[in-house]
Length: 247
Image 1 (cartoon, rainbow, N blue to C red):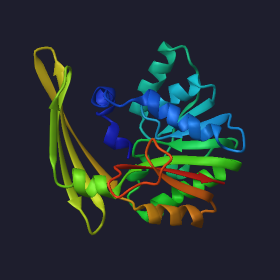
Image 2 (image 1 turned 180 degrees about the horizontal axis):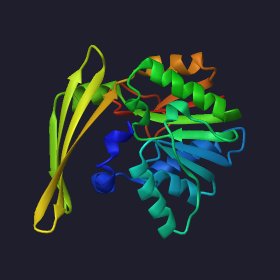
Image 3 (image 1 turned 30 degrees about the vertical axis):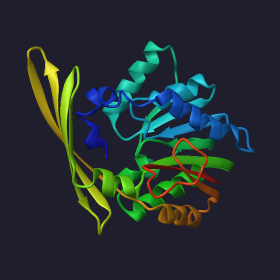
Image 4 (image 1 turned 60 degrees about the horizontal axis):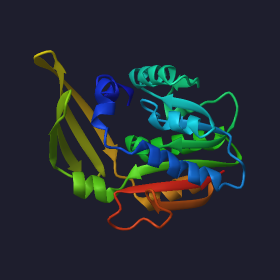
């Protein structure tokens, strides 16, 4: 998984510039505040370039960022320095999440669980998260839904020319295996020329029911799934589903 972001890290924030991270962090904060056990310590798994982790720091949480990509963590560290914030950043595969002490909540936003492409991988992450949480602690994560991956993205091609880069994004959907292969060609501006690099990503279209089953198998209770950024049940056309589970 880490290799998939080795080149993309440098332009990731440009490609994600339309994402409202402030609203996303507020949504996560609302869920954390509703927990019966007060939440002070949070681990942000698949934290990427640190956009959500930094905002959770601003909200007053003691945050640790975890990501498998050293290139993404390097950018997160630079952002933290610029903003005068200090929090641990750990290069670690979230399937093997290991903390020096339990925490009150674990978050994993923006497709981190979609990159777990087998049920065994999902079980590994959920089990590691369960062991890393305090009793009564929360696991919060979202996924791009099966509808989004297999219908909206499916076998389609997307592209865009931005100020500092351009990209072509080709998708190939294997519905029997619920896998979407993504070939991303990015052209980054370098003076009067462009430099090209290619990346290959694979995501799995997990169903809501199989994720709930996996959570229960690992010991989680009070499991909920919402249409992202709401507290209403996800619908057939929901493109992102937010999960909440308690140890």
